[in-house]
Length: 350
Image 1 (cartoon, rainbow, N blue to C red):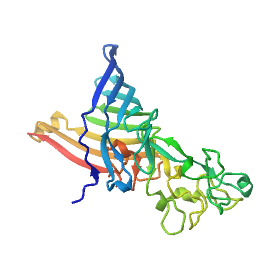
Image 2 (cartoon, one colour; image 1 turned 90 degrees about the vertical axis):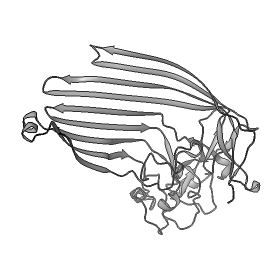
Image 3 (cartoon, rainbow, N blue to C red; image 1 turned 180 degrees about the vertical axis):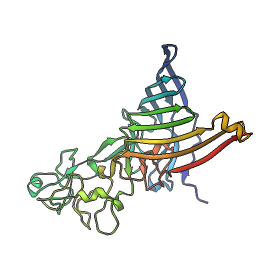
Image 4 (cartoon, rainbow, N blue to C red; image 1 turned 120 degrees about the horizontal axis):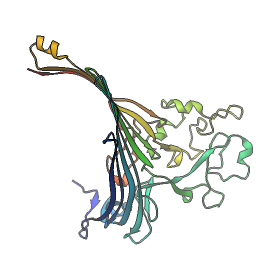
């Protein structure tokens, strides 16, 4: 066995200091209840796996890299919308917004490299995407005049990138922070309805503002005629008369466009709204239950992961190849999608 991580005898425990201000309110005999919490969490001596040069013989080393701040707001609203002998309707809404920022690095510089796609830098969120920034597509030959090019053979239909340092050439020196894997906010909305002996429950969840790097984009979006492509490549540039949507470049076998490397061409907004759960149940009436010689009988039908509304081209907008690892969060290499599950059952009390 060969270790991939360099040991570190100087490691210490992370330290955390947190301040919270919260309030709980009830109105109209608690038919409406509101909870709110504002917080600031400061972590010092943060533990992260830092990427090492290949010459070291190791991939990474776990280090106490510095300090990070998390601050945000959490809200919860519960309402009893209708409540009478025949019909009841209850709702529960949750909202959470969090911002994180690196305050200090203990690695001797203001930036560390998490991977080929991400960095951790003082003043920015942890694991920010650090890539060449795609501006669009050269729609015609005239747009090439005086433009910063990534290859001498760049032509109309190829990707256009931002010349960050202004030297007239597009290369790795033009990388910048172009997004983070952390959402601006997340939310949930649950509703339960009861009409007589029938109950219906609907659960929605959503996320807004986070980004995911589609690591398999070179294959899925390559437009090289070798692999099958998702439908969004059908909007590609074909000619100056048919330039497409200005986002997808022309089909090409060679890498003239320098767009099939680590650029924001493969970085996508993963905002979504998901119908997480749908449940329908029926309680047998007391009369029928008595005739069947049972105390209670409940028949139910449930569907989880009903449908996801998103523009993200991968299988699942929440997927991350590294799981909960914050160092490389938001990188998707065709993770297996969430299954849709159907459940039918009966609960019986004798």
